[in-house]
Image 1 (cartoon, rainbow, N blue to C red):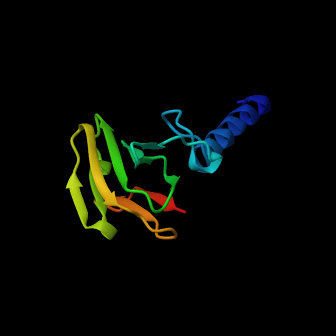
Image 2: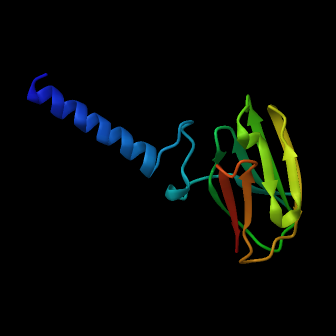
Length: 132
């Protein structure tokens, strides 16, 4: 292999590793580091935080308002991995989610500074909702 081809392959590998480890998501969703995730909305006085579960959770970090009744919507779409096994210890929630569909979880009225963390049954994947 010539020197030019080696350099091109090396650069491609480094760029690929950078995308995998430093950001970018497989499904094109905004990453938590960009701060552009639009997964929180308030309807009829209830705050809804939407999390997608498939090969992990997306977005990994969300920001929501404290002091508002809040529901977590977890969406699945052909989810056959451990992210379908959701545990939220702070509210005593543990469930195997449907392979495709959505679950609505009432998390009450969150307090500022007390984040909500969800984790898969194996502890490999997690998400965090910060309340302020």
